[in-house]
Amino acid sequence: MTADTTQPHIGQSAATTHEGILAWVDEVAELTQPDRVHWCTGSDEEWTELTDALVASGTFTRLNADKKPNSFHAASDPTDVARVEDRTFICSVDEKDCGPTNNWMDPQEMKAIMTDLYRGCMRGRTMYVVPFVMGHLEADSPMFGVEITDSAYVVASMRVMARMGSNVLRRMEEVGATFVPALHSVGMPLVDGRADVSWPCNDTKYIVQFPEERMIWSFGSGYGGNALLGKKCYALRIASVMARDEGWLAEHMLILKLTSPEGVRKYIAAAFPSACGKTNLAMLAPTIPGWKVETLGDDIAWMRIGDDGRLYAVNPEFGFFGVAPGTNELTNPNAMRTIDIGNSVFTNVALTDDGDVWWEGLENTPAHATSWKGEDWTPDSDELSSHPNSRYCTPIKQCPILAPEYDDPRGVPIDAILFGGRRKTTVPLVTEARDWTHGTFMGATLSSETTAAAVGQVGVVRRDPMAMLPFIGYNAGDYFNHWITVGKDNDAAKLPKIFYVNWFRRDEDGGFLWPGFGENSRVLKWVVERMEGQAEAVETPIGYVPTPGSLDTDGLDMTEEELAQALAVDVEEWKAEIPQITEWFEKFGENLPAVLWTELDGLKARLGA
Ligand code: GTP
Ligand code: MN
Ligand code: MN
Image 1: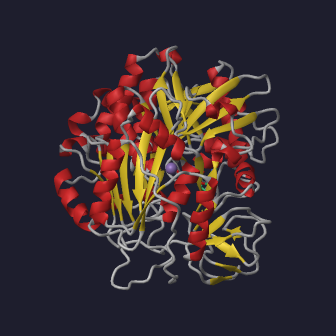
Image 2: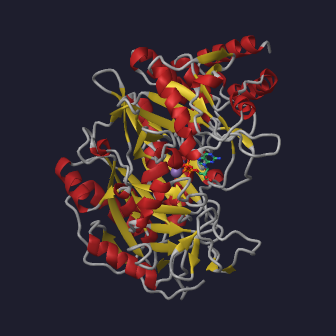
Image 3: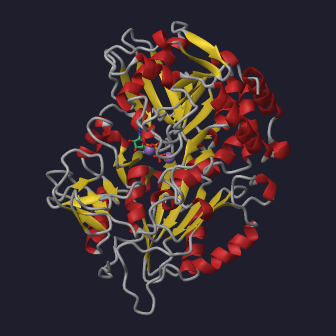
């Protein structure tokens, strides 16, 4: 798919009085040699010029305004569709600080390699400077960043996903703010008469975090998680290091507000691995009467202990970057309402003949569409119309059930934390931890089958601690210790209660035992009732699970036998987990907190293993 070489050429460069930013921008321009430098304002005019230029260059297709106003379709290069974990590095000065779960390279060595790659890499292109803040501009200490990128697609997506532009830059100037420098290039200079393509990228990819310097370098990919550097790279990998040093938590968690029919209000955060249901749960439409869910965030939570000793969470993002396939009126009606409003970017879904988007699982299957690969697609096609990791990128403010507290820079006090993963067997629908340390053990041993959200084999069970395996910016053993310390240093009674859920257990025929989606409100109800001292539970070797009668199953199409299977704690299955957990813990050597070994010993004893 070649396109003409029209480059977005936008406005006049608006320089800054912030000397640090200016010096860095000059240095990067000197190295990367762009044709133009554009300082992003975040204005509507800029959006229009950018998106027009992206349409002209063939990266974007404008959608039918009657269906999705001010919205665009993009198709990536077929090799650039997901996060690349094997190309992601934590370049700490000391290899020990990277730990056994991350890739490491000496920072000087990495800088030498990447500096060579960056040299002249923006020739023929525009270099965009995107000032942004993760979280609120009015936060006590706003978390600033500046992304330099040669991708207009990234700029358009950043405008949806983060608070960015002139007002952020002005504030940075006023306070002389420190910021996380985040450098991104697709790695395809337009030299020697080379024509541009609709999705420039490079076979050589590096996604690199320098934790001590709080700096990000990304090369070769245009895909969201690799290229929108405020998200996974800053708000999780770099922020987790800041959080360790400063005593807070940066987590891969949704945030929701739940109100019972009696008006009891709880805030819940939940960590599930990529493509395991955070966005769905965050916008849940409860099936049980009188219960109400409001959304605060669907992917990342920054949590700090407040003056009252409770754990307060904010969502540092400004948009949703949600998995498209499977999203529909039944599974996530609130996401459908959010994207209906428009102002969205859809990547790697199918384009219908009437200028709308479609993906597997959506209603109204079209008789014909253009697949994400640009090929003719019909319902009889052997190939999928949309990549399994295709995404919608849409403003959070459009969510019809956005909680007003979203705008509060202080965040909301979290009552419960849910961990969860995708397991066909073994893990029951819901388990309550005995205490914070046990909850940390549950999080540290969280396991899930791999999904299409990262490049690699799908469906393999791996440990994904706190759903943070690809996102912990330091030694995961130290990260577990940080969690334990948060529990020790604070009043246990005020900390959130911890639960572990699994929506994905299967029956003998391979079908899901639990209907999931809106029905997950029944599990949330049990969680609330446990916290209120109302619902019953049985103590099992792995924690407290609901008695069959304590879970609200009114109107649920499920037999008693099926429910029992969903809730079952099978001692033999759990015994089989022990060697895997042992092997997992052994990876961390001295860095693993001793109390987690004690937790494992306790579990073994209770199982008779
Ligand atoms: P990232 O955005 O990559 O971090 O992932 P996420 O955790 O937000 O995942 P998302 O909510 O987009 O869920 C992705 C997949 O999980 C989709 O295929 C959904 O259909 C499926 N899913 C979500 N909730 C449920 C559920 O309760 N039951 C079942 N069976 N599938 C679910
Ligand atoms: Mn995620
Ligand atoms: Mn999501």
